[in-house]
Image (cartoon, rainbow, N blue to C red; front, side):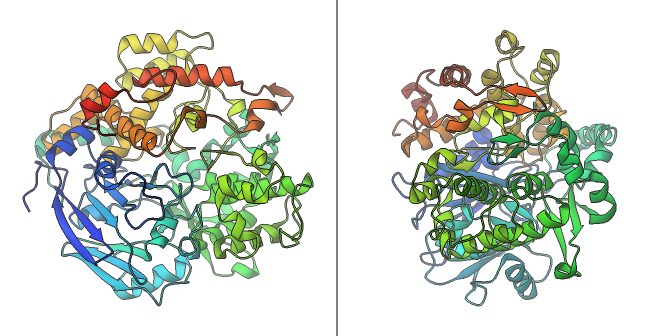
Length: 631
């Protein structure tokens, strides 16, 4: 099949129909590349093509759409990012999830993978340049992720990337994840349950296809500059040594780590409970890097103790482990939380949502709102490691009380009753990851409110406090027009987080669509520079303005599809606790949000996006312009 673009793209996607075990190669329209760039962007356009209105998450026709951007498969540093788009079983809205370990789809010869239908028996997909093979997985059903992945490697060879679900996905736990090569994850929004519903245990991918470059001379010059900038990045050593927990001290000082279901916040005590020196000197064995990444911010760790003798664990985002199974549950020490992280990952579940459910249950028990018999007579005191371990296994297997927790943060509280919903810390059913009260000026925390899928991480330049001048410099790198920068900075608190969030989302979304990591180094490169690299690679001339235009289209389509599934502005809010209770960090009191405050900032965000300020919806004229008038 002829490539529709000059470079960067393979020019086709693979459509899988599990109803009839049919695989079809389909040419990727050039206009999709020009309008939506790739990866998460083209995924969203394909979701419009494949996701029929009214289909539930557990419907054979709910598509799982995988995508890798044009940068994937090149020597652009950090460019192995994959994204998945689907209808989430948590809230029935359009869900998205990303990971740094699915780049081999590109080497198999495809930019995207669309999976529809439902197999009549357990299978796994083996994808190469020859297409797809439907392999029996009946012997894998019931195995945890580690066991299943090892068994598939025995059958395919170790060079295949294996994206597998565990028992949680098989049992339709609504926040089940997909684990890649036993350490990276498509974690959020419950896509593992969608895969389990389809009787699809795993996807194994390998290939030897190359990625062409439209203008090799121009591309090489740009790469020389990019690699020079990279090697001079002042925080490179810290990223390699500590990964995502390099910011733990700063975040702890700000009170970003929630304790006791966000009634309290951890302060600097966290640094004693989870020593970074202990991590680096005793627990860590070596660095782990995603394909094409020279940083290696992930960790291969030792699991000490008799029960874990000889066992090791690779962790993709250690900060997620620290938060979800440490600060949320009241447990301390690397040994404890890493052991629990291994168990949760083997079962194939999102750490954040599992931890959020456990901390909710502990508080409900403390307040007398939970029937002990309904909770299997477990000891639900804060910091009980044995109970946390049992809840993880019960949830993955849907055993007893775990069957209730398996319904997730929206539905489980309804089943528990007794005002339990007030204690579920979620936005649109996705667990909150940090306390927004202590940083109301953070784009990452504000975007939890307005993000269409629910809580989203990594949409951030402001987890550390920023001055207006720093915000201005970021906006200039991100291609924000001068008059919009003035509007963002014309605000009593220094900058308007609602308006800023739109542009931060567009910058990080651009990196998602291109297929590169958006950890801090990559956000230091201007969007104009990324556009030049894209142009040299693909032969499609672009600048920062055209890429921002594409990102607006991505967000417009995402919003329109979610409107179709029932989204309303009322869902863009925070849990009651954050609206009624203040929180104290080292003696400093941070007030609760007000509804007026959220409505005002959300209105600014909608307005910045070109949506209706009052309703947050996309206008009929804009839908017509996008070719979505039928929605």
